[in-house]
Amino acid sequence: MRWVGLRFYKRDFGGIDWAGEAAARREAALVQPTEGDFYRALNETLDLLGDRHTTALTPTRHRERTLARLEPTPNLGFSMRRIDDQLIVTSIRPGGPADLAGVQLGWRADRLNGEPVSVTSSLDKTLDVQVVVFTDGQDVEHEVRIPVVPLPPYLGDAVRRPDGVLVLSFDYFAPATRRWFDDQMRAAAADPPKGIVIDLRDNPGGFIDDVGRTLAHFFPDRQPYAWVDFGYVPRFPYRTRPPRDVWTGPVAVVIGDGSASGAEVFAATFQETGRGPVFGLRSMGAVVASRDLLLPDGGELSIGMRSFRSGAGAVLEGVGVTPDHEIQFRADELRQGRDAMIEAAAEAVLARP
Image (cartoon, rainbow, N blue to C red; front, side, top):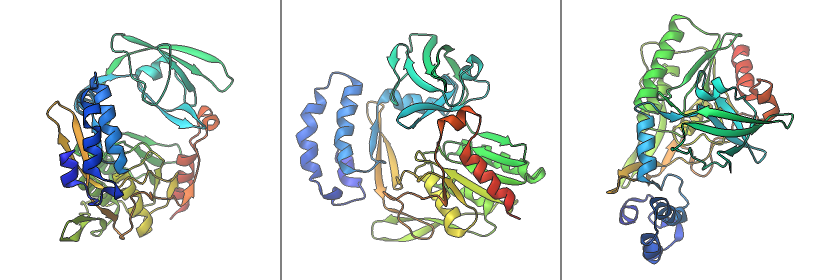
């Protein structure tokens, strides 16, 4: 709480008495019986600030997230999204355990090991096989036994569609994913696709320097993409540094309500410069320069520390990026093997010279 009091970027704390609120809630947090309960109380206090970047991770969750980016970790190999108030399978990792078990896009996830599925559900680590009950489009239930298999860190997917459009999907801006992206762009320079679609629907952001180095592949000149406040120091722009081979062909970006922070900066840069259209859903609107601090118990505290603007000076915090072409997720289309957002973006790049 003291770190937040010293570092939070809104010096009026959004109009609340931060010191008073923290002091009033301290004892109730300290008497919580478990790690999860303690951090839940901690985050209830942090939530008063109304800043999605200011939050705390338990030691267990911090360790899991760190390992997932460095080494193989247990995973079922599918992800879900809330569509029409239902949790729908929206992506399946090729060759992963869910894929091999026959899980299909568009299925509704109902129960995990006998318990109702929610966005906070977690695997039962005492079981080598997780039992998941799904419902398909004809309201037929499928009880699927999915083995827990350590999967290598996910860097991204590169898919060249039959129409010649290359779709690049990744869920974090970090050195490893950026190097993966560099490799994909070198391959595209050697064997050019008819266009490129960047899929950031599940991307919550990451490191701002890696956002810039990824953006640089699409701009032949140094392009400002962010402005950050540093107290009394005047704002200064972050600019791209073009690599040797810059993609000057058609490109589009796809975002969703899970796109946040650096993903929003990426999409806003395309939109503000006219480099390519943006498709999908309005992004999260969580764009503040933050810092992560390791806590003594192994947990992690993230603090929103600096106000942040896009390359053109727009405030994205609380606003998000509104796509040029809004398209909704539809479970029935996913069950048919269709992804309307990607298809619309692909059609757009094919229509450009």
